[in-house]
Amino acid sequence: MKLALDTDKVIAEIDEGIGWLTFDNPDRRNALSQEMVRALPTALDAFQASDEVRVVVMRGAGTKAFVSGADISEFDSRGAPGDRNPQQSAPDWKLGSLEKPLIAMIRGYCIGGGVAIALAADIRIAAADAQFAIPAARLGLGYPFAGVRSLVDLVGQAHASEILFSARRFSADEALGMRLVNRVVAVDELESSVRELARQIAANAPLTVRASKAAIVQAGRDPEKRDIDRCNRLLQDCFESEDFVEGKRAFLEKRQPVFKGC
Image (cartoon, rainbow, N blue to C red; front, side, top):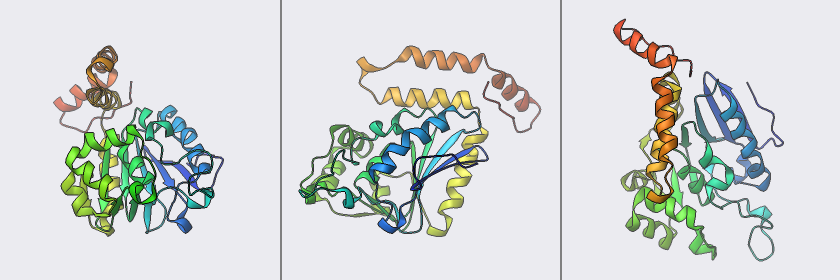
């Protein structure tokens, strides 16, 4: 099922419990335009509200790029975006507020704002041809603190320093060594690998997955900003759910459980 958006450069579809979010600007290597930025909250709200969607996958159209950064056709005469910088922090795109698991399926260029989008995902799977870079230092741009913190939290200070200071491109294998991605697979195995992972997640108990994601997010925040009460409420929801009963029954009956998210 395809969702209606105010642009044809972002495609949102639901298929077998998976929400597919495709950045569809292949003529510009899926560079992120303001039109695309404005469409993201609508797509993510729809995925969040749908009981059918249990996991979301982000990908780029075509074979050249995931997202290659900001669309330079929208830069003004000073070489800066005309109104709002598409390379702003991912939470402003609402990616960080999605309560469902978010996977980035990365092939080809993942540059600048593309890295920020990938960092907002819970899991990043890259093809062997993926290339990563944050070229802000070569463009004279500032990189938002939220984006820097996300990068440091993921790869550590030393790797973040090399990525930001050098502005050079890193291969998929280098990204794996830095822990920037979870896994690197052959190009022709990328989609099947991501689909299999997404299906595994979608088959699990939605309330448990939601509680786990909430706890992981809170664990990454400063201690004084953590909402432990919400984590405890979501945990209690799991134990009071029909899915908990189904999980125990399926285990005893030695069959696959059928979870309904309630």
